Image 1: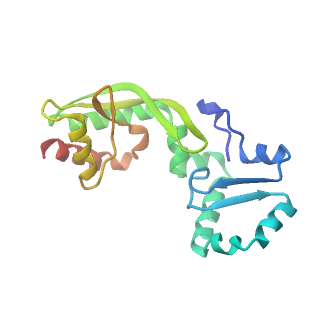
Image 2: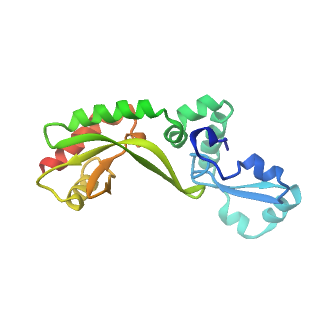
Image 3: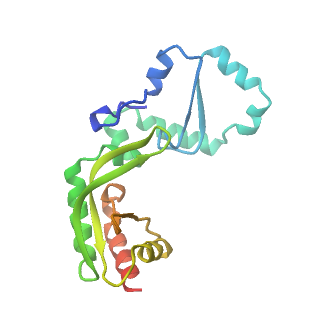
Length: 199
């Protein structure tokens, strides 16, 4: 929905660009593309949309009122680009300032210190999803270096904890990406990591 090229995410047309190219219809995901509710969205020429509406499958895949309300609320955020980048989690993560990510990473590193060695390192966030499956963004990572746990064991403990923490393994070390962590989640995350390291 928005041009993400200022954040080094280019190569995919926006919805507006796709429609302006003259195609009959554009189909996209409400959750993956908009960061809103799970829904399939179809835009295009009036006759193409009318043909889809008359198909018997249309009744089976139509959205309910709750989905439509959530979709309306999400789309309203897109009226102001700054608001959408601040309020829609996926857009916030994709467009966040690298120095803010570094500050959050440093706070997380300090929060798990004492339980295990942790360090802040430069790394990459994998965007994933249908629009940018191979795209990577520069980030800071908190690398955990416990002496007593294999990386697979630690990742399993983190996922099985409360709350579950999804980490990844890079160069045989467990890393956490502060890009995907909200500021108000830092203490909860640090506590969960400490618990997994002590278990």
